Image (tube, rainbow, N blue to C red; front, side, top):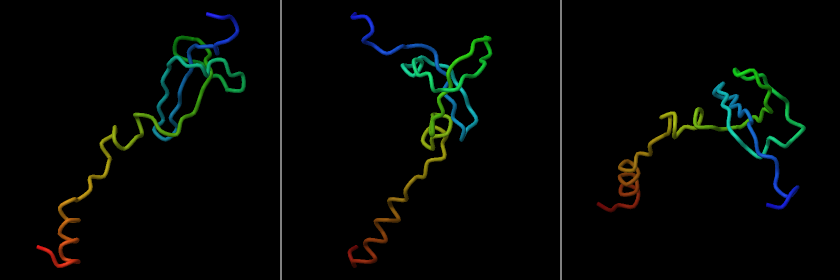
Length: 84
């Protein structure tokens, strides 16, 4: 690898404020100096990046996803246009 070409890669805390969840992962965001830091359970201070949606708050993963009533849509179409 060429030196000074690739971004820094290291531990970063991702925080989902909507769900109140924080998780530690590796990212190239570790090289950013404008991020605040957070004291983690292991005693280390890591940069924190706030995310809008994570698996903890996404409707698909939480089970709150809306299921469309496709049968009702078909019946509404048939009533409206006189088919069936």
